[in-house]
Image (cartoon, rainbow, N blue to C red; front, side, top):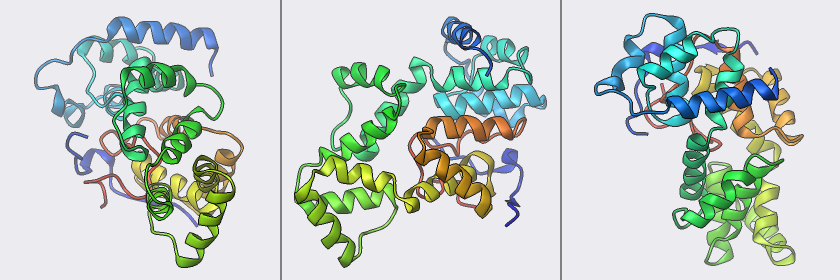
Amino acid sequence: MTPTVRPSHRGRPRAGTRARSLTALALALVGLASLAVSSPAGAADACADLGDDRAYFVCQSYRSFLDRTPAFAETDYWEGQLPARKTVMLAALARSTESRDLVIAAYYDTYGQTPVGPAGLAYWRGEVLEPNGFRRLEAGLLGSYVGMIDGFLSKAFGTVLGRSPSEAESSYWGTRVVATSRTLVAADLIYTLEARRKTVVWTYYDEQFVDVGAASRDYWAERLRMGLSYLDLRIALKTSVYPESSGVCSSFTPPVTASPGCET
């Protein structure tokens, strides 16, 4: 199925508050840290008003991965790197400490029952960059659910699949919980084809504002099964759509529907 291209990102509704070499990436991370200063007053509307494609892409990328608009110095720095080093820029933003802290907090908010504390943030800040780090965080938070099995399954299905379990699923997965653990059951749900396909479908919608075709959906769903992280999926999709880019419609955690305010 050919993707249905929706209206330009620049006309999309706002959501409110809401490789090169390893050496090159390391240098980019250092550059990001040195440029990270408060955005100037009034910068909240800067992305929509930018006429230059490079500046627009930088602004939307900052919104997507850092939940803020860039300072003028940051925009100027990255504009000079585009389009040749767009993947380096996106990787630097997405894997920066600032971004990881926001993502970890979002995972705790979505999958856990308590906000992340300093100890949890310090631990997961490095762990999420390890193989399957974000999946382990997601499964661990779901597995730590305090309450009855039915409540756990409702939480897991709701956040991973965007729906409630059927009676048959409640019976099957409830038995699995007793035989194994909540964390393992959560990990199994995350790896289901349904979950991976939903992640791909709605990540395309949030990042590119298109309805992905079946072939691309299944390609990326398989990549997720083989170990690609949701964060790297976002980087890949954002890179491929340059210079158009979603900003406020991006989601820090795997989406099971369109981001609020971005449904149409």
